[in-house]
Structures are given as structure tokens and as C-alpha cells.
Image (cartoon, rainbow, N blue to C red; front, top):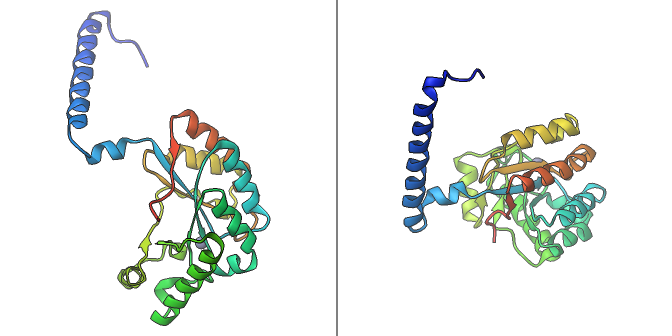
Length: 229
Ligand SMILES: [Zn+2]
């Protein structure tokens, strides 16, 4: 950028000082309000979520990295994978992460009967509860497939629906660098990041995690569990 003409500089600096003053006044006003939504929105919190596990191969690698960086995450697990790898689900819960419901067999819940919806959710609840001692209160419908019927059926089972706001499409295996860049370019305070620890070869997701965790921490982010329990 070219530098402004010398004569402009003092005026610009004064304008900058006035702008900073206005910002400080605005910030002070926000702080004075109890529980202002603007404060929550500005908190540098990010919610990492991992879908489609547990995987006996990739979930333990994810757990090791999260532990190294002291980060907790929310895992949306598939009931039939929990049934096949119960000890992995147990580990996820034991390490302080949140294990939530991603259906039994990953159908589009908009296209199943009400009875099948109930079975998909309650059978998964039971398997997760058996390993973690906690019944999921959040449901992430496969493919983010949500409509009014899914919402009311979920509410009828006491579930809140949790989607995401940052999707690096790691499941399509675009490469470690692309996953890192897509996450780091998109994250802002309050972001819910969708990643996958199951459902296929997740080595790129695992490889991207250290840079994602390190960089977000260096930007001042803290990591929180979704409000599911
Ligand atoms: Zn999924």
C-alpha cells in the first residue's frame, strides 16, 4: 500500500485515535451489561467435533493428540461402531471428552419412519451410556439432514440437534494441508468445527490436527465441549 501524503498524516492519526476511543467506549458499555450476548459471541472459544467413530485405528490417534494439547472435544458416534469398538468409546469418555449420538447406522433421518428414527437414536444412546455412564443429550443427524419432522422427533426424545459452522470436508481426503488451511481460514469465535475420526481412512485428519491445535492456541482460542450434558 502506498503511504499517504505527509499533509494527511496528522489528520489520519487523529481519526484513528477517535476511532480507538469509540471502540473503548463501546467495549466498556458492553462490559457494563450483564450477560450481554455480544460478550459470549466475542469469546475466543472453538468447539471441535469428530463424527462417524469410534474407529479402533484413528480414534486413539486423535485422543493422543488432544491429550498432548490438553484439548477436549465432542465425539458424535455411530451406534454400530460403538457396538463393535466399545472399549474405544469408553476411552473417549474416560479422557473427559463428550460422546454424543450420530444415529445407529448413519441413514438420512429425513427418510426413515418415526419408529426407525426412535430405534436409531435409542439403541445408540444405550450403547454409549453403557460405556460412558452418560446418556447423550445431543444428536447430530447424518449429512446434517434436518427438517421439521427430524427436529420434533429429536425433541420428543429429549435431544437437541447440533450441526456445525466450519466444514473442511476432511472426509473427502483433500490432503493434510488443505484440511489445515480450510479450518484455520474459517474459524472465528464460537465456531463448531466438523472433523471425522471414523468412516474411512482418516490419516489426513490426524495429520492435520497438530497444526490446527497449535495455531488456534497461538491465536488465543480455548476449546470447549458442546453444551450436551
Ligand atoms: Zn456422519
